[in-house]
Amino acid sequence: MTTNFIREIIDKDLEANKNESRIHTRFPPEPNGYLHIGHAKAICISFGIAKDYKGLCNLRFDDTNPETENIEYVKSIQEDVKWLGFDWGNRLYFASDYFEKLYGYAVELINKEKAYVCDLNLEEIRKYRGTVKEPGKNSPYRNRTVDENLDLFSRMKKGEFENGSRVLRAKIDMASPNMLMRDPILYRIRKKSHYRTGDKWCIYPTYDFTHCLSDSIEGITHSLCTLEFDVHRPLYDRILNELGAHHPQQIEFARLNISHTILSKRKLLDLIKKKYVSGWDDPRMPTLGGLRRRGYTPESIRNFCDHIGVAKVDSIIDLVVLENSIREELNKKSQRVMAVLKPLKVVITNYPENKKEELDAINNPEDPSASTRKVPFSKELYIEEDDFREDPPKKFYRLSPGKEVRLRYAYFIKCEKVIKDKKTGKVTELHCTYDPATKGGNSPDGRKVKATLHWVSAQDAVSAEVRLYDTLFTKRDPEEAEEGKDFISNLNPNSLIVLQSCQLEPGLKNAKPGSRYQFERQGYFCVDSVDSSDKNLIFNRIVSLRDTWKKILLKK
Ligand code: ATP
Ligand code: MG
Image (cartoon, rainbow, N blue to C red; front, top):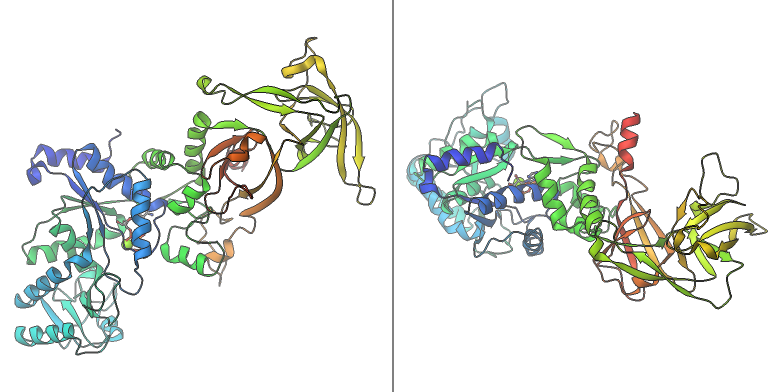
């Protein structure tokens, strides 16, 4: 277990026997979108700490906004937290279950003259609030009597007033340097059905009021959240103090940003609505659903979160770091197979017409227990189009006229003749000879070849669609757009390339959705769990084999 500043604080709290040495954290999503890799970091921190300290972690939906929230999001969030490997036991909570209690707390604040009903509209409230440089002005409704406030607030609840006509505000300080302390709104009228409470309520508590009190109600000891909440902390402390409620200790950490992608739910939803991606689980999305469909494992994401650690300063983590975590895992675990993505036919002219051999291929050189499998070899094969050049440049060691190469696990072959389409001039077929003495890929006379190619037997191969993904955005920081444009202008037009009729070794015929393989020399691939079927096999490229970017970055 690597330590970090949060764990150091907790260690001290335990030493001092704070909260009777209880450790109780929570993960508090708003059900207004799917979880993304940034949330994974927050989940790993809060659930991880509870696990390591033998404490508890709640899953609580901070569901105070009837406009944006729904049950689909609630379900997907639970599924994703479980998939990531965490368990909230019987501690699944909803802030909306506390609406009655929260209403009671609001009444208590009114009774203590710490809250009032304000009739300014939102525009006026904004004007009265002042600016960072200038103090705000008191609302003309600030000095209403307790009785008047109680009466108006209860009538707000009964639905007597229109949306936006009144709000309940905390009475704090309109001159506070912290804008959030300038009499923040606690309740709004919103005549809208809530996905859980239906039409029971037409006033809804604000996020800030709800969040701190929900943590308090649940007896949370350490409220771990992202840095932007540090300015909210004085407000939370204030509300809890006024009510004499239990104080969780809030600790802020840097949010995760990843290069070449965005982690704003609103913007991700924008990409879906405008059909730039196919949905929340599009394999290019940084959502957990997208990463899962792409082929990422929960372990690889947890390892990534461990690896990046917990800091107090925001930064952008290179996407390569995330890619490396799945590469590392699949290098150890995944079965190697041969798959030709852009097939070029090869006819072995001196190989008997009806002969077929079963050759031994190693399943995983990193894992001796994975042993070997048989792959068929016959007169007609496919190799990768890119592995042949009619006019090879210097240092091109793969196949070209008159040159000899090794076919992995098979034989040495030599290119004797190039067949082309008469009209287009495109190479359609190669005629090669093989050397029967080189079976298994070794020459008995010590003859050397400089390249080893992957291949498949044409009559045995399985056809499949392969989807190659690249980064969703071309810019490291997609928000850095030209003047007058937004992040959409930085979308990568080549983020998805679909290859049809790829030819794979026959063992992949029954590959199950979600199963992962290394296609030799190509990368790691996963059978798509949504679109793939027995009739139409579809693979997603998870990552290429090596991180080609490192080289690019070093060159710069
Ligand atoms: P919204 O803009 O809708 O509030 P959000 O990303 O804050 O979006 P929440 O559902 O409120 O979404 O997030 C739940 C928790 O996840 C919060 O405690 C938040 O601090 C944390 N979180 C959100 N984004 C990140 C991120 N990029 N890195 C780390 N933690 C994050
Ligand atoms: Mg939020």
